[in-house]
Image (cartoon, rainbow, N blue to C red; front, side, top):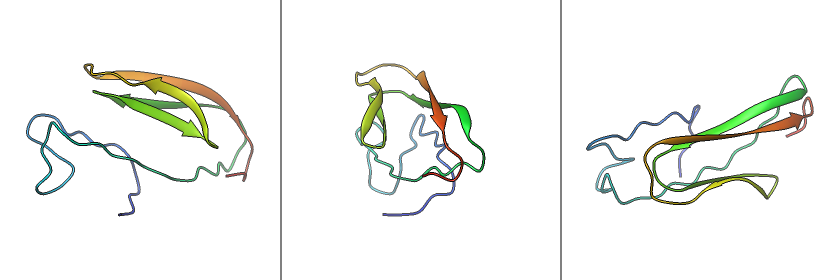
Length: 84
């Protein structure tokens, strides 16, 4: 497990998430908290080539679970200031 300040990875070509991990045969999972300083509508998005899912508060909001070229999906959420 590791802590990352941003999720903006680009593992194209021969890139992989770490030593000894095949570049075309891996999965990754991130967990985190989002605590906005200001409330209101926000757009959360995911971009990936291959399957991905986005859950917020245990609820599935985005599902694009298939083998595909890079695609972006997004969802609009109303966030409450300071509530994670």
